Image 1 (cartoon, rainbow, N blue to C red):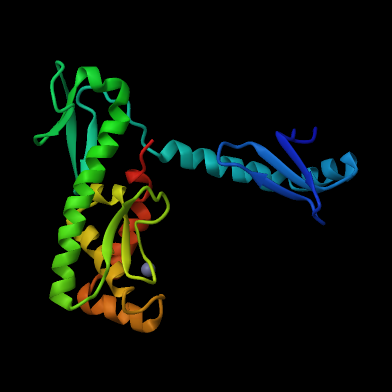
Image 2 (tube, rainbow, N blue to C red):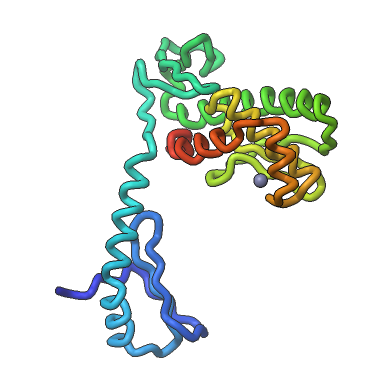
Length: 225
Ligand SMILES: [Zn+2]
């Protein structure tokens, strides 16, 4: 059995050899300057199982991310429901929502961008209003709402009270969005995940553990590839 080939080797003033399996499966090796190549190969051989397991996991993850092809009838999420795509002869605006996503045919080459822009705008309108509503209900102070492209987190709150949300959040059901909003607003009071933080969340969202679980289970579904 041969050694797994290296896709990229970076030599630098470091003291140990490190292996990184990149999201696309490529093997990156970092090693100290003037490391003997046999030593690197032996190291890789000793990590064969780990490399293969990591590659399999990444492959499974990539496959579970839904890919959009922008064909007639394809379903797209919005506020926890799926709506079909309808392609229509050239018109303006290029993308409209009418219980279906109505996309102008000549906008197909930029379909991904059109959708992202549309989701972003809906996220901005919806979340800005909803945050203001909850802040008033529960007496929270915050600076402003920002919509981000974050991929791994749904929301965050800066020390200065800016509340950030990933635009993808607008694909989730309203009750899940409410939980994320109340979670981030609670961070304006507790800038951590302490017991007091969770007690505050609990007082507003009694079933927050179910909501957290839902977000964990569905996070792939709202990725955008
Ligand atoms: Zn948090």
